[in-house]
Image 1 (cartoon, rainbow, N blue to C red):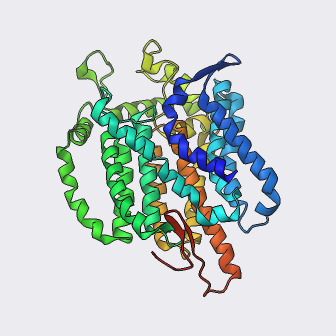
Image 2: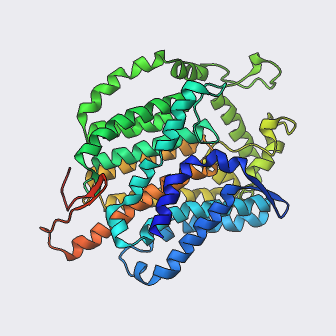
Image 3: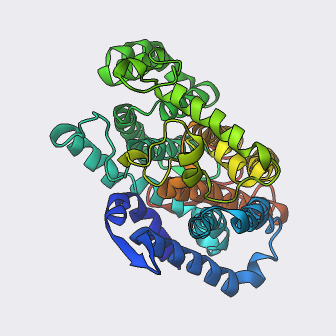
Length: 433
């Protein structure tokens, strides 16, 4: 089973566009091939729980991975009952279950896999194909928009995926519990520079901000030799992909009430604010439990003044472009609170393990904060592959920490265990590489 999970982590980033192309009609609904992979992953997680439940739930803190998502999943699941699109609500709920599943799965793998944290290696390996395709795209077949999207269906998904991969690399360059070997560390620094270049070419400003947060945290708390790089950041303004995207924020900052010419156009942030204001007014009659899971998109055709069902972009509705707004609109104050509690629980457990892995804890905190920033301005709930890697990353780290905490409680403080695995190693207690 561990091998299957490793393969899924390895391949998922390379098949987004393939899955989106392979659409299947089933029961009067159109589904992508990714829906069947979602079901397979849920089945695998359920099988692992059934087979290993006795040993899993005997471990200290074993309830944490399953309980962290439970309140939000309960609210989201119940809200399907009053959703305007129940079929989409069921699909959205199953997708949410996969996100929770990828957080839980690392706790279900056998002890050697938890100890080596080999899924972190799979996440980094998974970026090789998208990085290669991204480079080829820039040279030979760049989209007319000028934004790189590689193997993903949208540049934003590629951008946030790169942000998470960079977070994993920074974690492994910082952690004292699992880290790169010295040779691989040098290679990863160079590889990170390549990924940053691709991230810039996605032209996704929120991902730029998230990656900046991760890097500045790494430079300040882990390796201050890299602080000089930030002095060079103003030079990025001379890159058209950067300068043009930043300049867009100064244009079209207010909605005039009409969109009849280019002069009426508003920038993406003003467009989001207009949509969010419209959504808040529409959900004012159901603030406690919201309008139901997956109701935002179809309802946007009614409450959003710019939505036009005759235009291809708005056909079927438009996403909230904010996970927080979407959670509030679809599941109300209760659902939004439960969703935010997921992150509060993560920060609390990082604090619990801070002494075990101080520098790794700091980088993991910055990666979660970067992801939360992305939640503010994008359709994060809809980015399946991104969420699989993000929540798999967190689950792998927490499972490793939980195992080390358990071992340290029964082993002598002087005991040092070293385990080398193809570029990654799990050093002993308090040992930094």
